[in-house]
Image 1: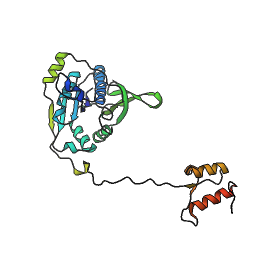
Image 2: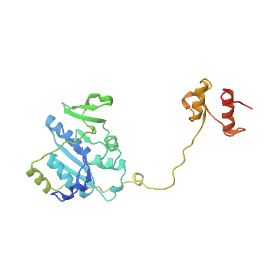
Image 3: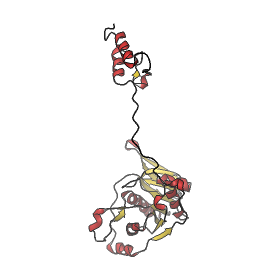
Length: 275
């Protein structure tokens, strides 16, 4: 089965003193997704290709993906893609997915920043189903068997068709230890660059159009339910009320305002002596 892995690089200042003289590396979610793709290749064969959308500075990290076992890496970029939104990024990545691909692996939200919704947008563009929280995957004849982490520690197993987008669950990134010769050979390779000529539409860019203080939160006192006991009614009133108990808003515009309504309620319940 042929797989594509969405790759992303981050800048890591701790690598400044390393032997490679570069601070760019693959982020952890990408490495987790890569490990799932490589495990599927060991089980079902096929090719694993990495696809990224980023600047040329990412090439050092993408070469590391080659050393980890990826058969080929393609990086897409263009002059206006730095401002592309989720929709524009998904369309560019979809165009970079080669024909004959059976499954696209993606990591979760990026380790430095990100919403984690890019994989869903890519699935929408491709017209493929999406399965999230995947922890393991095996291949069959025209289908995949994916294990998914569900709530409460439950593990679910799905049989899914090929041509699917799988999102890896948040897990510790596995350690890869490629041979030194393999790593050196990967460092000498050129990353295939795919220049994106078409511009991103203005509707897919973020633009700050206003700035101001936050709006104040509206505070309301709620009239307690008439069915509640006196002590409970007083507790509801003094705590701001309980909307789920069927109370109504105290009207501040009535004669005497909220203070008069509160005094009338306390006098009616015998908690104070009325005049």
